[in-house]
Image (cartoon, rainbow, N blue to C red; front, top):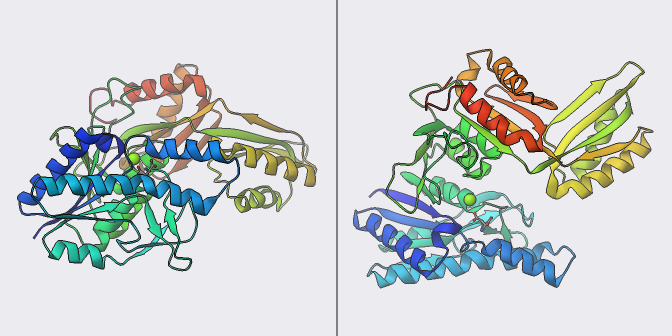
Length: 407
Ligand code: ASP
Ligand code: MG
């Protein structure tokens, strides 16, 4: 028997009608002879609403209770989807993450899956049932408390479960048609990709392409589970994320991210150990630093700039000011009006010159580059926030993606 794991995001299960059509899709797959496990997200914007409600009740942080609250969102969906499937004449049973055996670390709000003991899921399948699993959640076996996996975590649940069950396919049903060469809301000429590699998807997802949670792509790569991203609203072909693709695109796609801010500490003494003393307290405070640039000046001091998620800006700024004082640096400045634009392609490993073309295109549009970082298959530039749409459009056309072909 072929075993497939489906995942349905919030928009796909936003109301009763959509839940019934998701149930129909699951039943169709079941009737084709597949074993089906479906991972579901909270309905619509329910997770945001629950977060808002918590903020109205309390302005303190309550990690354990927050996870109790948020996991309720997915629990509602799983039960409703199971009911709708039963009404179509197919046996279905729903499990919370904990019941499905998804064991995680204890870090509330950012827990990581460490093991999946999917016995109950397997039993359900063996009994001929469709199994529905609440996404985004698990349980810490040490404390026995429920945990959540971070925003977008249902993708990780689905791919990890597919790996644990040795499923044949993992299909991520979503509100877009697949993975695009750029955000189609910004670049009307963006086209849907038929396929891309795990590596490329990981870079794009980490650079702001919201379509898949980065950790889910890591699971896919680690366990060799192809991830099929497709629309839950029609039968279109979607995008396949896998180990290798036919064509080694030099530029596969462009992502942008407006969720970071830049901090600069000026006149940092240019001596060994200074970078460590700046970034250790930030790491200890849980701030995820992304890009870092250090400019050496000639008077024995240096400016250090780095980007952090805007959601962590207050903490990061506080830590930076404390450190600046302790090491006798200059001022700390904050720039929220920045954005990062990233070009990704597996072919960059072998083909040189993409960076210089990217910089030339930005220069021709008079867009200033504030920071640069690279990996073997990626180049990212920080630019002014109000120029980012223009930058993405210019790069998309300048690197040959407008006509669907890569550079
Ligand atoms: N409901 C969670 C969120 O909104 C998890 C998910 O949808 O993947 O982030
Ligand atoms: Mg999502």
